[in-house]
Image 1: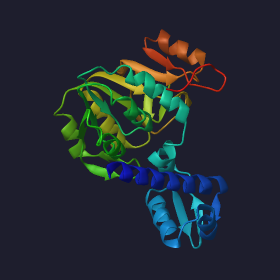
Image 2: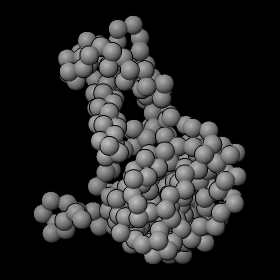
Image 3: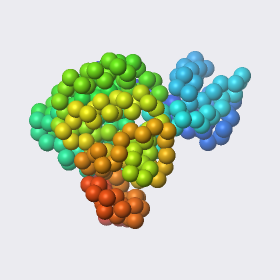
Image 4: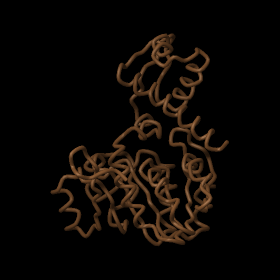
Length: 273
């Protein structure tokens, strides 16, 4: 029953992401076109559009749906799940290799940390602490992983719990390794666009013996509004092999412990796990 519910939930999330991608590509789309393209009833499409509008991803204007390319849309977990998928999978594989039996680790709300979920079930005695509702749903049925879900105020845009309750719960713990991500890496600092999300990430970092930044190569030399941390505050920074070699060299020269994950590509001789 649990697997059936997860499958249904994944299909629903995938459908809404498909609707979002289609509207983003075309800019303005009549609701009638969405009904035909996705073979949905009017009630189903209205429910999906209501969720997407509530998350600030699209806007309904009469009988048309328009794309809403703003900060919230770019940060939305639904949007991020479709970005740099191969790179995130490679980073997640390398990050999971740092986890040992009996560890207590923290995974934040990021889709890169979320990609680690499928790689953790074989690690004995592992405990995972997370503020991601999606990760709680994915790891909950796994009997080999101890799971601590952090409460607080729910953010539908990020599918995560944030706020004072979340932060207070974290600060009562001790974590071996915190795996966190961010929206941008500029210079020698890491940034994110939303202050509440930053506070949750900082709380996880503050109680961890080891801090690991997961950042795919697209995020380097980009910007976001609020600073999360300096790169020097992380014990390890993991990115993918798309990073500019000059940038990678500068980071290492500055004392940053940089690990680069190889991304499987057709004809490369490297196959996905």
